[in-house]
Image 1 (tube, rainbow, N blue to C red):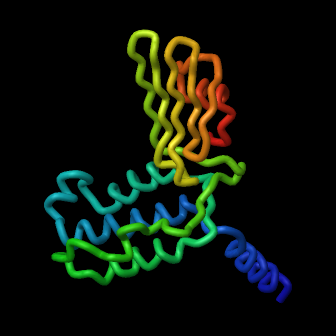
Image 2 (spheres, rainbow, N blue to C red; image 1 turned 90 degrees about the horizontal axis):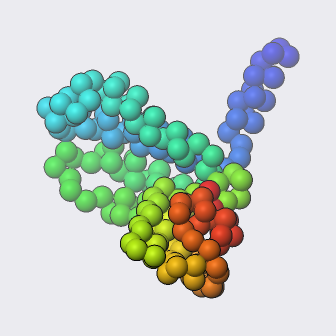
Length: 178
């Protein structure tokens, strides 16, 4: 009886806490692969071979979301549920238009995570842009020589330095991102 009670406690505790973006990504991968093989088998077979290969590759992509939690993924869950029920000919599912609306996702470290970064250099100027961030901001460092402007999507300030990399821009501007 004691083991059953402990297993029940573990199961209950495992369900506690904030929803993980990695787990949501894995659910999306399962739905996408299953529906892809149902609705466009030839195309998905050409891309992945098997449904399991599709899932395995998708899970690898989800690993980058491992340390991100969200307050509310109900809109995302609605999107997945409606996708599973939709006819193969469906071209637009309204709940999927902005599935992370009001989800408030963030890194467990308290820092925003940006899935896209771009470093451009031209002559003595450079620009570093971080976008698709979990805090919905776009971060930009623009430099001409050593005169730089840090813009975090809410404010802008001048600094002296250069923009050689994403990491250098984060340090120079003091952004709370990773």
